[in-house]
Length: 97
Length: 203
Image 1: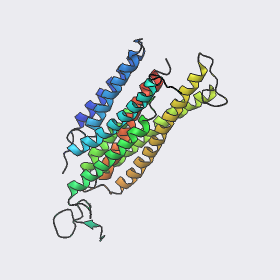
Image 2: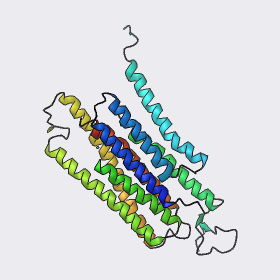
Image 3: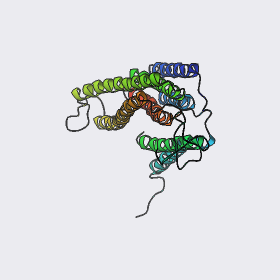
Image 4: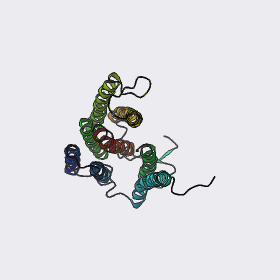
C-alpha cells in the first residue's frame, strides 16, 4: 500500500498557494520597473514547485520520477537558450557579401 | 476470467479485493511506477508545448482550489472511499466549468472590444502592431490552455462515472492518480499564464 498523505498537508499547500496568489496580485499594483516581471515569474516558479512537490507527490516519489519531472524543464531551457542565442547575437559578426 | 490479468498476490485465483496487475509487469508496485513515469514524460512534452509559446486572479484561485479537490480525490481513491471519490471528481469538473465560464465571458468582452486579432482589430493606444502581436500570443496561449481544461473536465466526468461503479476500488487507483497529475499540470500552466498575460499585459 502506498503511503497516504494527511489532509492537513493538502490544506496547508492550498493556503500557501492562495497566499502566493495574493502576493502576485499585490505586487502588480506596485511599480518596480522591469522587476515586476522578474518577481511575478519568481512567485510563479515557487507556486509550481509547491504544486509539484505536494499535490503531484514529487516529494516522496522515486528518483526516476524526479528525473522525468526535471527533464521537461531542462528541454525548455534548451529551447529558450538556443532561440535567444540566435536572436540576441544577430548582427554581432559583420558579414561580407 | 481475463487472460490479461494476473493475481496481484503470489499465485492462486485473483481475490476480488486485489488490484489488477497487467501481464507485462512483475508486481503492482512496478505497474504503478510505470504509469506514473509515463505520465511525467508526457507532462515533459507538454512543458515544451506551452513553453515554446512563452515569449490573467479569480480564475487562478478557482484552478488552485480545483487542484486541492483533485488531491483529495486521489487520496479518497487510495483509501477506497468510493462515494467521496465520485463527488470530489464531480467537484473538480465543476470548478473546471467555472473556470471555462469566466474565460468565456472574458473572450466575449475581448471580441466586443475589437481585441481579437484580424481585420476587426482596433487599438487606440500606442503601437497597435505590437498590441495585436500581444493579443495573438494571448489567444494562442489561453486557447491552448482552455483546450486542456476542457479535456480535463471530460476526464473528470468519465472518472466520476467509473468511480461510482467501483472501478477504482481495492487498490485500482492508478487511473485517478494519473489523471490528477494531468489536472495539477494544467493548474501549473495557468499559474504562469496569469502573471505573464494578465498582470504584465494589462499594465
